[in-house]
Length: 345
Image 1 (cartoon, rainbow, N blue to C red):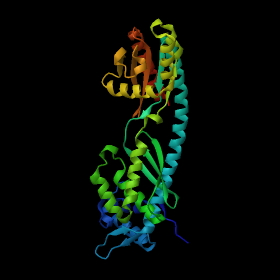
Image 2: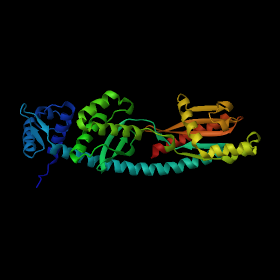
Image 3: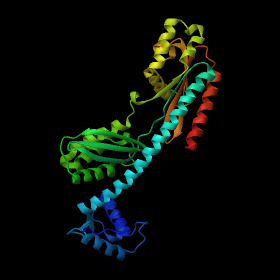
Image 4: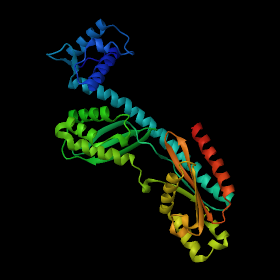
């Protein structure tokens, strides 16, 4: 029967493992005694380390009085870490699903109200995470040669991706790869993951270097946002018929088709977001509009932010003689409304 560890032993074991992961050197009681959350003497820590050694969670090296974690110690540490993170991920996922559902209802209403109040066509994109810092990464086996990579990013955005791997790996290898990846990647911006860092991780992974490469590719893919993954809500397409210069049957039909197809709107939103970073508002008139079917229109886009790196775009499409002052006032009002909603959630 495996003897249960009390909380103090768990904290000491965790401190030993974290220190060993950082330094690669055997860990002594004096080093551990400096951890502020332990608040116990070196003598007490020595006794606890002796017990942990007898129980098989740490190993004393021949060349030092310090200890290093055993496979059993790593297993306990990762199981505890995984339980904590799985609970956190489940809570975050539930929160984000609820928040997303509420936000989509709000955005649909905003698109409708904006079209109604301006007499133009309106679009609103669902906010997406604009940052790329990793908080936690977890590999779990789905089948002998496939893993699911769960990535938690800054802003509590959760992504996952299924990957095929070139070899079968056992539980112990999976455990060590989880430790290796989290030690190297936690709190690292994706743009800072360079070839040198990847090479070091592959070297540390030894014969499992190809698996590490596949995981890094999956991490980059989960954080990257493709246009087809974005959502946009529209309203007011029939408002185009209110303006003689846009109401020609063929012209209006093409315009409405482009508007409802939405793929061009996503490109417009992305372009407006990058062009209008300094002011938050971008105005296109006639030939400036980057969508061919909208060359007889004016388009105004504005970005809005909900905190935590979440950003979306509001857009208005109307005739060249658009009432820009009224549109900008509407945008500012809606941006404040969205920011107020985000603060209340």
